[in-house]
Length: 328
Image 1 (tube, rainbow, N blue to C red):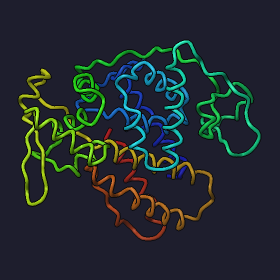
Image 2 (image 1 turned 90 degrees about the horizontal axis):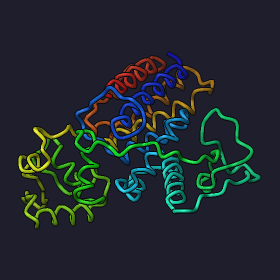
Image 3 (image 1 turned 45 degrees about the horizontal axis):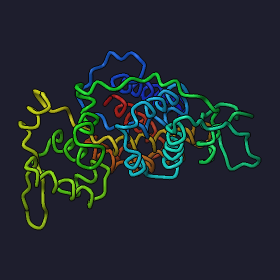
Image 4 (image 1 turned 30 degrees about the vertical axis):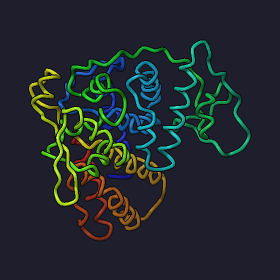
């Protein structure tokens, strides 16, 4: 399998997965899936913005969803989950776009493209537009044609398991408390430390500590101390009864899993047209897999870093990526 073939497979499978996820969360698209896991809205947004660079329709519809459902979205958490400059540019542009369009009675004016090479097309493979550029994306060095949102997205079905995070935000507000409850309610662990909660929720340890302590003070969470470490848990049956659920949705550490996928997608795009030798390609593939292995393991995805030596590592790498895509 060539780099291009693997890149196209990854793009196609992730594109299909994302449409199915958003279709269960209010996007105007039919989805036959009814997933039992709890989605992570901001982590899903970050991956969608990256994959949407090769699917403009997905990108535009996700922006539309952000505008319609802004009250359930945490732009601060979206920033928190950014791990590199590419993440920050996409998230920053989307947040700036949202800020402009939320202003009642004021619509951002399209702009002429600037002179210089400090900008790049948002949608890969497209020719750079010559007029009517979106100023929010231009601010972050990205060419995107100006387009008025249609506000076609619906509010999510908050009873669906996949929308547990959004339901808890409606109940507890958009912030660390809702995320702490989501993780404690769904994670396959009786108790969790503040450090583990911070990694899974995308909030700083101080915010997580304050949120968990407030829940404990309200009598809806418990804590215990093991050594010097404080751990928190929820009375799960009481929470399930409150939410009218027979069982908790499945927990997935989406921030770590989706970050690994973004890194792999960008690496495949970068190497799609490079004429590397089989040996050098395999060597670099080993390096990129090693770079994301910790995130994948945190998300519960087993990663075999050994594999064959030399050029024979490339088929092993391609097989690891194909198996990763089957998780969705």
